[in-house]
Length: 367
Image (cartoon, rainbow, N blue to C red):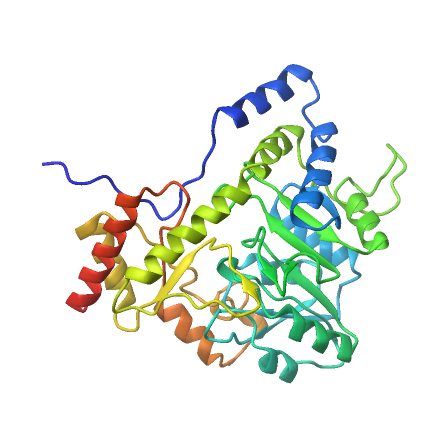
């Protein structure tokens, strides 16, 4: 006997317009970085960054890594980061030869706690890198004021926050640089890729050099660089997606509002007064047997859910050497309790009703 269709936690949307754009690139013969990348950078800047410069790269992780290098981060430096995030945030710091220093999060929005950050600043600290987690902006005003007061850079990991705002200003326009991921499950995608924004002309030029083997003109290599270029194929997909992301985001917000209005027995997402949340994830808290809760949703109700992130960065085998014996209580609690429910724009009203019924049933059963 067949049951209801499974509702996935995430669902990339790739349509005929994206396929046509890719075909046009393939017919042009210009497949590597070229005019599509240049157009994508310009349009991304206009739509999401209030005109701040945008530099396309081959992944979000490359964007963080090259942004830090372009800002001068290297061996002997420390950059304060959250532990409650995907490992790429701290990895990018470690890859420069600098040390990631893990701060705790505030429990309302899962973003860096300003007081925790301030307590960790040393003479080696050069920057603070908040993550706009789940699409909710970190308090970049307070963090920016702290950074300015202590003579530090502010770097933004905006991998999940396309179109999010704080105080009416887009994320990606507060720090020395910011990175947006264009991975398939993000709010918009280029298939794979990243975009780095910066208001510093020197950082922008170094980013462009670093992504292209250290050269602006062919064979005139100015510094040791990488091959981190975006292809025109990926940029063509991204340009189409950029025309749709605003409508998709509004649908995510409507879906989130429906869930928050109807869910019972779980802690639903909070939104800061000055924040515009883009709901890359709709994340609830389950205080008792979170893993059993997720299993029941999937097996009994055919509703997908994700746990982002079950192991804090400071306890990962790859990163724990940077944080021996570290105690981050809010980070640990979030890692035990968070569950992300489907909120993507492909959901129909019937899907939302099923998600609500499933969560309320499982929560009510004390799973």
